[in-house]
Length: 144
Image 1 (spheres, rainbow, N blue to C red):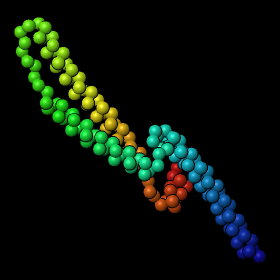
Image 2: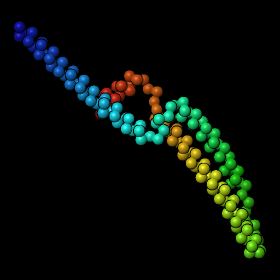
Image 3: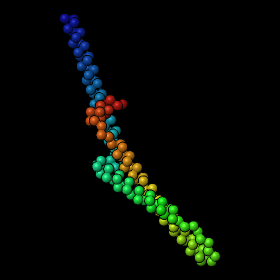
Image 4: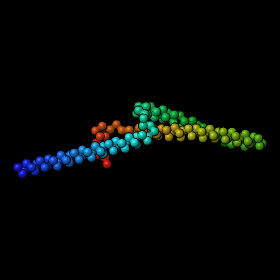
């Protein structure tokens, strides 16, 4: 009879331990799920589907290539400052060179913006995982 009571006590302790572990795991899972959702909400592109992001990435890559070619062509085709004798001609030459430089700078600015947008899309795609749902579940359950 004493052995029977010890067996029941052991089962009760194990059952209590199992209940505590299940409760702690559920709490931890909910906490990690909430933290993941808060992080996702902060990302500007989290609402887009993966297929749409891949199309957007391809479009940005093409545009960046095109703009890089334009930028290099504009940068390489710049003519130097021509020496002018008359003040009016010097002013016109200054205006021409300034306009040419502004055009190159504008192309460079647009190129930089597109490269930054492309990096954002690539970052969003890299943060999305195609992990096994069981791995995701276990990570949320056990990560503290």
